Image (cartoon, rainbow, N blue to C red; front, side):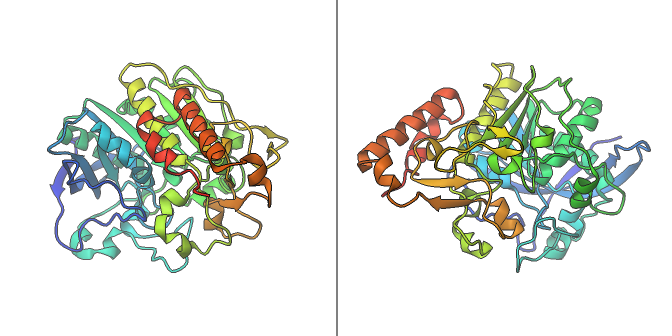
Length: 425
């Protein structure tokens, strides 16, 4: 079966892959952004192994006038909102650019191309796939259904690896995409052996179904009918499963699928982190309509460290560090006197707290607000008892940042950015 062809896309309204938070200035960094129509044939991964033609899109961001590392990071674009999004690009862009790793965002799923339902809807947001968003640019796309999504992801990644001359290729995906990457790891990777490592980011308890022709995956129905599904234990490439506090219980409910580390597996659980947070939503926080400020945790910096360790591990370097799990007893988190969860990966906002960051929202919160967690003030008078002076707080915060760096869960290059997040009063 010949590999897909890549044809540059142009016209219409430009690249349809918006983000609430602006990323690095790619031009200033010597990077280029290109968007391609990828046309080829993909196989299903069910027992029929049927083949179908497809034409989807892939966004490629890579060094042009800057040094390249030889690593390609391929993100399974997320369609939970009903349209393509790249949450891992938002979290990881600074690390990708400074390391010179090329990035590709693949429209692997039916709903992102053809339109469909949303598993997480935001009031007022349009549920439109690419063809409806911009017919002039994307009208020629054609997705045969999510029975072929896994094959499409492989074929497009293989084509972009050829385009960029990549020496190693990593697969990443967050939220719904992580459910599909779990299925990919368990059912597709043993056959294809193409990717050199996986970052499975904020997955839930089940794996996604294999999909059907002519339609998108209904993840909510699959979760209702599915069983907790760990990642297979006979891995041949490194895998990091990265979970926020907000991913373990509640709507995402990773806990039943939690598994121990293995020779090529690390499970990281981040205290005080939500499934999504202020880093993702930026200045559009008010648009969510949440009753409390959304989570102001430091998920992004741990995600960047995870990618650094995964890439090094895939090169044949040392394994990623092991992390302690979050403390859970009888299906509930063990929390300290402030309400901050114990255990897990610690960042300065939980070990030198000026407020209380939580992975879940309060009672009665909407689905979207539940995913964004919340940030509450410390009880009255407690801040003054914890931190008699602002200098004492800043010193403790810096010490916590350095401890996270020493443990390998925050990168030294991010120290200044982390310190800048210390509360000002």
